[in-house]
Length: 366
Image (tube, rainbow, N blue to C red; front, side):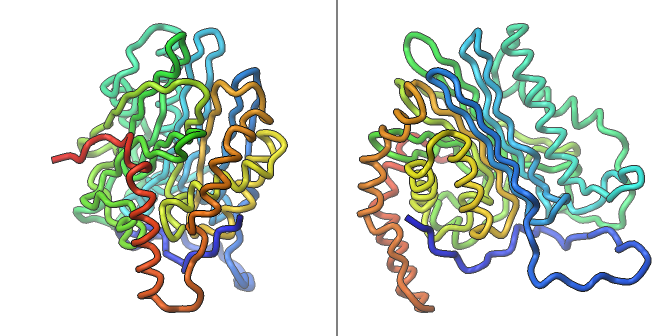
């Protein structure tokens, strides 16, 4: 099952971007098309646990997504998945000049500081018993951001400007005798999900935007109302739950789910690549190959499968769900440029998919 290409949607630009000046010398011939950086998938396979990450950049060496985080503490059965998407519009101002290297934006630096803060917080949770609460994660983020070196001066100013802004979507989980206890933690519009054999893909977080409808978000790309940053107050949202094994948990930036025609097509992408893969490494590679031509943004994903005997058991568990999704019309995009037909098809397929997709989401904020 192949996802048809979505008409190009430019990455979010809350403000004009400021690229560093080109070095002196003859200008190189312009490339025919922007090429993504070499993708960097990663995977691991243990008994009853398979994990992978995918990370691609649209601009080689300048991607504002930090590398995705997938950590699992085997003695305690605890883990953390997380992704971080530096906010390139509000964080476009330069923040750091690498010695003899490129200038890094606030968005680039902010995403990587947030990743370090989340990883350090998880280590304290599993090794020293620190509470795994949103307040403690926020404290770790704030402390790391405030410790960052003074930022490069810039002429860019305005109400939309942020210091070291980034999204965060994290899933903290623990496997015990009762099942898989999970806590979604987030700020911004990166997302946490569960993929369950019987019911498919479920969102576990709710974007920090004024628009609550996932299809409307695809059509509008609304601005965020909350991001991790160094110069303003932010909120780390939280939502808890319990699953029985087996289950799949994942986090993703909008480079994965923001360039499809309907929310259902993200599940189609996950399952179509899973059923073709022989192991976690090949699943990561197939996801990478599939997302690079689809997206117009950096794309990050972190995933863990819990409770499946092995990868063959994981693939088999989702075969029936994949067959059902394939027959449901989520891939039957109307041909041609008839936008009215496309909107009717989107509305119809979203209406049939929405209730299960939203079933485990936190409530709408007042």
